[in-house]
Image (cartoon, rainbow, N blue to C red; front, side, top):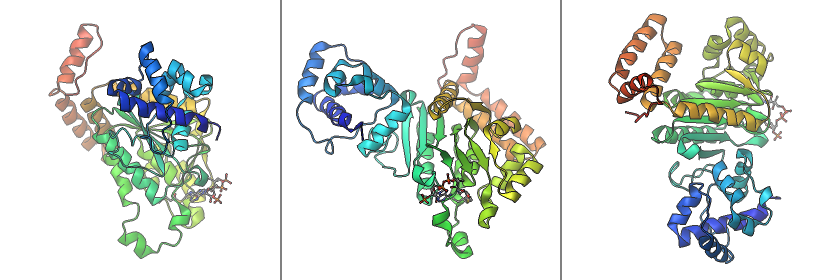
Length: 375
Ligand code: CO8
């Protein structure tokens, strides 16, 4: 691949940083541009030593890190064509794929050394956003058991990370996800599905406390549509296409589609989509009906950037208050109005036990930005 030529110097560079100066490595990983010329020269000469990239500690390059590299004179020295170095999220993913590593695993912070094969997981915005990219593009991101286990693992890891304020899930190329993996499940018998509690673990997604934003472009069919509906906010790209085609396969939606779709788009439209298995919903209609919050025009990268921007706005809020609000809104799905209002009230009262409530209201009065401590 065209980009391969860049990896050896990049990885060697990172490796060298690690070897000769933990401080320099920290500055690199923190996206700080290097201005110290003598350090730059020292690094340059170190980097010219040949270190097989397979042996190099795999490093993860976030958007900022690539940008830092993009501007960095040592990088220019090493890579030659600096203008071609990626500084988009999309290209960073290509970098990681090409390196044969999985984002998020190597800093030991997100996934504690665990490597994923069906998804990419990456911390962005200084750790405030956990990104999950479904990564089986050849199968249109069909939701195999392995993929869903990894999604859950990444979600739970981000949920437990105190730095993370919001999680973004997205797809790749022309699919968010084209449903459960038909090839994998076609031979299952009733007893297999029942005894193994097939898809039961998907319910754990509802237990994630951090807000999950789905950035959906391309197909979101069957389990893909259900996965989007399990998220808290759904942003659609122009090419998003939602549908529940399970009946075409002789089965029915199995992870909440019959329950959630009716709440999103009304009984008649939900019935039409589910019972015909054919009447898909495009992005515009999905926005009109409230299945998604809005359509983001432009490329997949524009959609992802917008989802990250929404995540950042959420991440700036008090984390416990965000979690309480999410719990309340989700309660509207699960319980009746009166019960929901009772729950909302008790959680509303609970916010008055938080320092962040005191700070938020005091900051308003003092006409300044609140400084939330997430307590
Ligand atoms: N499972 C497995 N493989 C898939 C799936 C899928 N859901 N969708 C696409 N693929 C594969 C195709 O088999 C093909 O593979 P190959 O190249 O090896 O033949 C590749 O992806 C590309 O697909 P197409 O050639 O079909 O691409 P097209 O652009 O022609 O068509 C469509 C795109 C319209 C999306 C088409 O692929 C399609 O109809 N896919 C199936 C959609 C579907 O029926 N989804 C519902 C699945 S059932 C379900 O989700 C139940 C959920 C409840 C249980 C959850 C359990 C986890």
